[in-house]
Length: 206
Image (cartoon, rainbow, N blue to C red; front, side, top):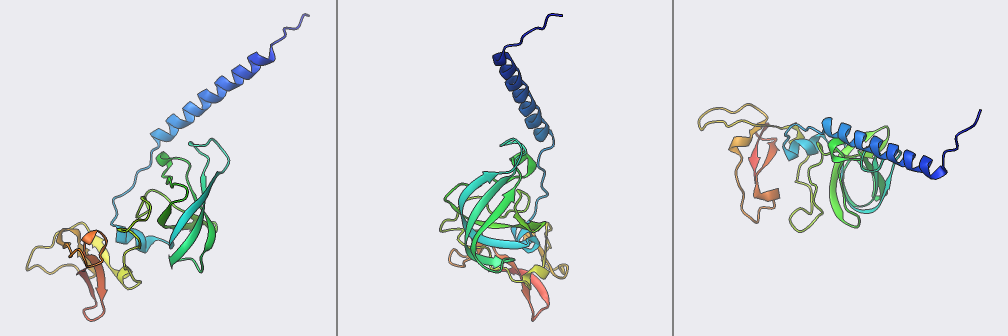
C-alpha cells in the first residue's frame, strides 16, 4: 500500500490554525463568563482586605496557559509602605487572573500603586472586585484612607436617613455623606465613616 507524504510545512500551518481557533474559543468563553462585581464602598473593600500596601511594580511574568486569556499575571512589587497584613517590606509577588473578564487587574511596569487584596494558599492576590484604586499613585491618592480597626466595626449602607429620624446603630448612610474642605485630607474630599468610642457608634467625619 502506497503511503501519502504530508509536507512538514502543511503540518505546521495546520497546527497554527488549530491553535488560533482554540485561542479564539477561549477568549469568547472568557467573555461569556465575564467578571461581575457587587458595588461596594471603598472603606468596606479596605476592611475586607487581608493586606494593603503601597509598592512599585518592577516585573511581570505569566503562569501556565495562554497570555491574555487564562495565564495568570504575576507581578513583582517592591513594597515601600505596609498598611495591614504584611509584616515587612521588600519585594513580593502579587498574582491576579490573566484577563479583565476573569477579574484580573492590569498594572503598569515601573509605576507605584496602592494595592489591597487577599491571601490564597499563602499567595498574595488581587482582583477587580476587591481593589480600591487602579491608577498609579500621584499627589491625590498617595495613601489609603485613614481607616482603623475600630472604623471597620462600621457598616456603610446605601440608604438616606431623613433629618429627625434615628439612623441604624453602627451604620453610615451613603445618602448622608458630606463633602469636606479641600484641606481636610479626606480622600476625594468626602467624609469617612468613623467609629466614636464616646458614642459607641459610627458616623461620617472629616
